[in-house]
Length: 505
Ligand SMILES: Nc1ncnc2c1ncn2[C@@H]1O[C@H](COP(=O)(O)OP(=O)(O)OP(=O)(O)O)[C@@H](O)[C@H]1O
Image (cartoon, rainbow, N blue to C red; front, side):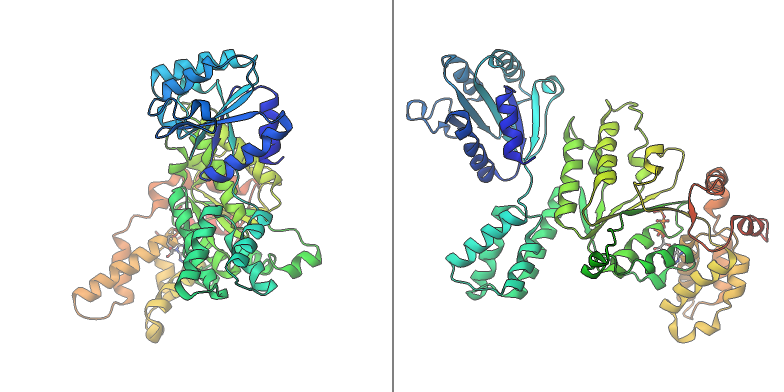
């Protein structure tokens, strides 16, 4: 259902107070105006703090600088007057007790009248006492058709001609931006060299990065890591390499569905985040990292609104990788404990999207703790595959040493005894191996010489691997993996791993 259809439905059903979250005031007001026609040309009153009421000469300037009076004015109008009252930036006044009370009283009264109050705000920010009075409606970013129309209009008014393929690329790149930002960024390109050139698309991408940064929930993550930089995890790497071209047009013509996502479960430091970055690099897709902490910070209703915003933005940027680090922490409270059910509602929105999504947003979620993950997340149809990323085996440790040492000391890799290093550091994760190497480098550097195998072993002897301090967590994860609920990221079997765990210590 489009925004306009949804709004019309709410207006007809006499929802008295509708809260519209948008950064695009102008476009949303156009959409509201378009809704008045099917409502017998209902009049629209627009109020803002600085100018008071606008739009009707009789009321011009009423309730200027007085948000409470703005509501009283609605109350004073005769019952027979049918109207929409658009109150801009009104989220700023909702915490005021007089305003909140007045709004609730008014809402009750307006249910029997053809009057609706529309609150416009950049984000959802509703105090608890109004949660039941207000209905939230999200105003989506412009779709491809809207963008196409706007870009064509702008370019033709500026007498700029683009080939159909450049125009297509420009429209694609503008997805995820508001119309206002699209206008601004095109104007910037044109101001710089009098016309819009295909390589100005970079400006659009930069603008997009900024928008994403401003949302504070998603981050554009630069991904330079290669799949070859992951030591071990051969099953997982094969899975990824097999899907290398699955976002291409050729794959669509072949009839392949888009891959949906991966859940990587395992203890800290085993290369899960590294894998997320390497996927983005290998598939040449932008990597968006979700900041789960930010998702849940703030007032009631905000988290849900942010989740929808995240979905909207990632779909607007598709094809892309959406990386959700530590998803277990995000949804640990799904049973509704302690946060008035917010995480359950956010989880509900997320899981429905995961199950129904048809857009090429590939979700890579990572988790350390299987116990706190809601079982629905593990059900078939959410992710394409769930991989258990265990501690590296001896052979895998050797591969990890090789990855890091060949990056740091490509010229004399042969001087390191990789077999010995791998053998003498049982239970070490990839991150701990890296830590030992860095520490060895400090030893070597402080003595003005290169670091050696001995230095790495010396450094390693000072590290207590997490596997030992968090034995319980490791065992629980191994047991879960052994129950067949996940595929092994690594090629060695679990029994091989267990035998190795008994090895030298
Ligand atoms: N299999 C591996 N191959 C090469 N390097 C690895 C591997 N595993 C871990 N590392 C090194 O350890 C660093 C940290 O690993 P990473 O952040 O990917 O672990 P993680 O499993 O995501 O841990 P966390 O759960 O703490 O986020 C990586 O940047 C990489 O340098």
